[in-house]
Structure formats: C-alpha cells, structure tokens
Image (cartoon, rainbow, N blue to C red; front, top):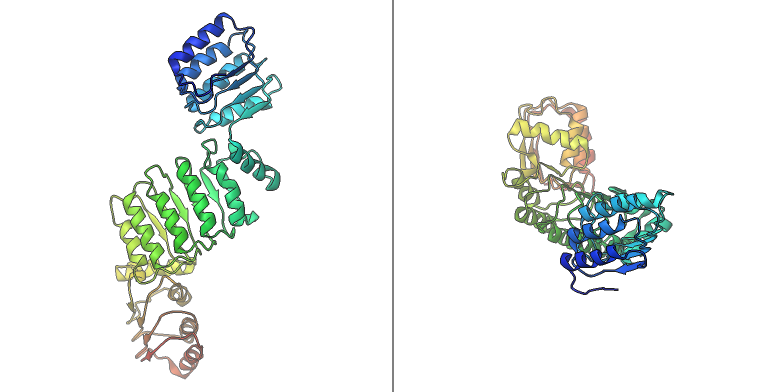
Length: 406
C-alpha cells in the first residue's frame, strides 16, 4: 500500500517497471491519493496488459484521473480480462464516457471484474436510494433524470445530493417538478451542483415553493463561471420582484450560457419583467427566450400586441386599443393576458371599438379576476344595454379593483 505517498508519474513509472520485471506475485496495489494523472495510469495499463500480471485488486481513488485515463483502463482490461476482480476509482473525473466504458466490463461474462467503485460512501448511499427505493436503473449512466413523480421533498433531495456532487454523476438534465422542495432542499441541490457544475445544462424546479430565498441560492450557482446551465425552468415557484431582480443580476455577471428561462406563474412586481427583458437586448447575454406568461393564449396576445404597439404590453401600465386596434385578436386571448400576474396594466382604453356582447363577456371575466386594472374607457363602443349588463356582472365581484369606468 502506497496511499497518499506523494507519488507522481515518475515514481509510478519506476514502480510499474519493477512489477513488470516480476509480475507474478503481486495481487493487490493501492496507489490512492497520489497525483498519478492520466500519464501515470498509462504506465499502469502497460502492466495490466502483461499476461503475467496477476493483479486482483487495484485502488486508484483520488489520483487525478480523467476520461482519457478511464478509457485507457477499460482498453487494458479488455486485452487481459482474466484476473482483476476489484477496481476503485472514487474521487476521479470520468468525463462523459468513462463510467460507461468500465461499467460495460461488468456485464461481460468474459471478464472477472466484479466490483467497480466510483462513489464515496455518501454518494453510494444516494445511488442505492435511487436504485432500490425509487427504482431508477443505472443512475450513473443516465444523461436525463426525471424524479417529478416521486415528490422527493427536502428530505429526498438531501439524500440524492451527495450523488449529484460526485463527478461520476454526469447528468445533463434534471427534472424535479412539483416535488415539494423548499429553500432547504434547493440549498442542498445548489451546493451539489456547485461542486460538480460542468455537466448539467437543464434544470426544472417548477411547482416548488422555492421563494426568493431559494432563488438567491440558484443565483449563486448562476454566477459560477463553471455553471453551464442552458435551460432553467422556475414556473410557479412563488418568486416575486426581489427574486426576478436577483436573477437579472446573476445573469449579467455570467451571461454566456443560459438561453432559456421559464418564470411563468410567478409575480414580477413593477420592475421584474423589465429587468429581465433588458437582458434580451444585451448582445453580451446569450439569453434568447424568457417565458413569463402562463397560457399559450396569453402568449399569443402578447406577441400580437407587441407587433401592433411596437413594445411589449408587459412593460406597460396603460394600454390604448381604441379605434379597433384589437383587430383580429381574440378577446379571450386578451383576457388571458390581462389576468396573468405578469400584466401590470392599470388603465385600458377601448374607445370607438365595435364591441360585441361576447367582447363584453370577456371584459366581465377580466373584471371578476384578480388583476390590478383600475380604469377602463369604453366610450363610443356601442355596448348597448345587453353589453352593460354583462359588464356589471364583473363589477359585482369582490376581487374587482376597478375605480374608474367611462
């Protein structure tokens, strides 16, 4: 055993040369904790290929081995499969293919390899939890993992975090929608990703009450230059203006990767939408898509009005659609936009419009929904008695905050 003995490639080469001259007796070698690197592993692989080599146990934890070294070990073991039964590679970095290359050997009846250790104790327990309790097969070989149906909660997230922070976990996409995760679970997740940030490119935490405190944890990760997130989904996460502004600040500090952000079903306050919308205009920022609106109908209305008005209605507090500027836009789609929490419209003008009874019914729906609409102008719009009656039904609702009706 030569654990933590400050051995580098040079010392490793001397050792392997000695063993190569007399290979038949040594059955166990432990070089853990030495910075052998891939070049040192290549020397070991030369010995493993020797038909006289009788190694049964080889321990190489924390040896600064990367994907190249893993692949070299797999190749060496294929060329001489008859002896090695245990290989320990905990604390190294397998890259994208290293784990699979070696795991394939376990399935092949021509190889003696029975035990392949990639994970430390805590990560091993997490892996066991995924396989035995949640019935997830081969979690180390997965690129996408959806645990939404399991409703992990903070306890479950804490259990899997040890695995997520191990470099042998090479997930690209993790989905944890509606999983009863709060700030506590979010903090555990983000801590794990901060330790192992380079693989994950898509994270979906929609439907969890992360609140602004949880978003602050996510922002710390977004500021990490090693973070490679491209898609981040945070719909229905109880985020308010403070959280929106924190996200905008984080993305300004590390603008190069995130291209899609979903914030539907949250409450941006007065400035949240503008803070993030400004990033779309910033050439230094990779962000291409921000989803604010909950329904496709609201999104369609927003896109239509943006073309008509020359600016996003989400940035306005007053909307003037007089003289039939509504055009072909379906009233129900406009309603979907107005009742969305991202709409900050306080005043709407529909003067000189041909409003039908159906249009009035849509307006009544808006008035009877939770909006911040304070003033509505409907002058010269031929409401007739029937239209007025329909609108009055909306005015009766306790949630209606309209102060001025013209």
